[in-house]
Image (tube, rainbow, N blue to C red; front, top):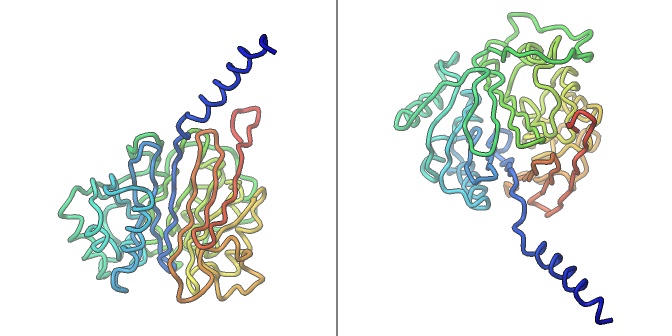
Length: 341
């Protein structure tokens, strides 16, 4: 018995030592409910933050308040970058309000507005003129410590890099050149990939059908991702996105905006998709084109503005947390011979 004591002391020392180690730092992404707009807070493992869009204006500062609540949960008071994907009201309307609640280091966007009559854009311009504003272009990186953030699309242009042939492009035709959506700010959307170790997250804003094809066909210039924010709030995308092979998709829809049955079915059918999560129950979809309530942050209209949070490790594993019901699901790393999942 006495001879075993040194061994036991070593075992206990290892156990206690492991228990005292700090938890591994994570990339945290908050998908904030703006009732069908976008506001996504990205917090690096070092605590630096980037806000992608800021939702709507009005509603007594509702969306800015929801951004502020998420920032408090993330212990963020200063945001290094506010990235405006494009200049529609549901993406940049809340910028003047949110700058009254948080401080920002710089404002990033795609440059000239192709819909200059937008009143919310004028308010946006007046706000960002008080700070540092920078135009981003495809291929550029956004310097947030601990992360690799690459601009893939901006101002109608696409990153110039190769990729694997995309077999899902077969039979998919571009929309006519005079398609109404292709002439809107949606087509100018800034799309970014955020990488932390082996974990990759993709946000393409409201990128249009043709611009999406330019990015993904005939070569997939993005590669595979772990987490995909559905483009244009879950409106219809082409099946070219199947080459992204996301493990999880987040739909930033509202109760009556985005999350169309057609768009939902495309996302839900993505090969290898483990789960689709939604910010809202989409009324038009009924039970047939919505995920189970467990995976929906807001099931009622009006709602309490609950968010979805993703926390990712450098090994590619991550968890998704529904702030409405506290449901959490873990997604472990999946490693192939090439070192990627």
